[in-house]
Length: 418
Ligand SMILES: C[S@@+](CC[C@H](N)C(=O)[O-])C[C@H]1O[C@@H](n2cnc3c(N)ncnc32)[C@H](O)[C@@H]1O
Image (cartoon, rainbow, N blue to C red; front, side):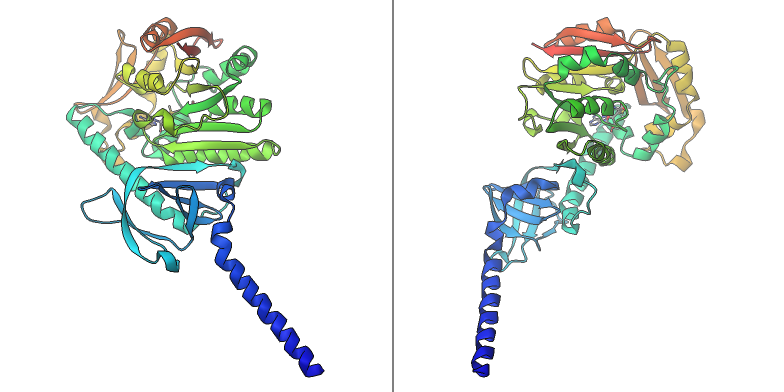
């Protein structure tokens, strides 16, 4: 009888192990696809309907919406001449092959449920990230060469070294007699500004340290849930800082569901299909901190807003006025960090010759300009509201409203796409 009991226990144990084994076999296909999106994830689009999704829950190979392999995938990047292909190997038996897959589109880094952002990322996620960032560097270097041949550096080059911008940002000449004039406007006129943009999904262009943006984000968090945001910036560091700030907001407002679609790319490459606009009928496109003033060709940045908006969408711009131009000019010239910031991609900081820097002001265009050698390395335009309204009218935007701070240093302008 005792022997029979022991055998029965063994048989039950064996059955249990077999059952667990069976379950593990099916576990790949039974993973809840939506769970993939419960944290920050990498979304890497390959050819033929295949994507790699990488989240804190693991890395998945998905074909036409169905998970076909999980974890243990490795990515090898060819050193040869074809940068648009990657080799992919899955550790699972049924995908234990090595193949080259054409990369159809760019990498999109998304952080859903931002509160989870600070959890450790799976190491595997670094491979596609490294690929995307190498690709981005290649594109930026190519643009840099073109710009040097025209003796004119463009804004995206300055921000490639985040530290140089942070040094400038702490004593930014854009601000006048207060910490941040645009922020002061937002705080003072919240009740007239917010109702006009409340039901719009926010899209941020050029997030920087997000000093001004966080006020608009807070309004949104306080008035609705879920909150869905989009942000595009050339710098992954600034997007990470923004995600960190959102994560902190998530702690302040634990009941709110905050999510963000963070796109690391240049404005000029953005197209509307990359934005996450599902939640509301219209979107509000926001570019503050005088970022528009960095473009020599104003039509280029206005075209970006034009092509990413639909009739009924709105545009909110924050910029500096010309009212204190003599003092503003002196402040730029007196800020020793500007030169390092402007030339960080072309001269090592230890080799900068400060005597070669030449600041000037163009009264006709409103540009404050820095030359180094024969190259225009930096510029910042100062505006008149009327003139911006007129130029935007040529890009299908109609005037709605504008607000100015008590020192008449900066303006927030609201336009509507017609
Ligand atoms: C002046 S800072 C932004 C300041 C911020 N909006 C604020 O108000 O605190 C400009 C930002 O735009 C980004 N940027 C500049 N040119 C860009 C471009 N062509 N494409 C994408 N991002 C760009 C920079 O990386 C930087 O984060």
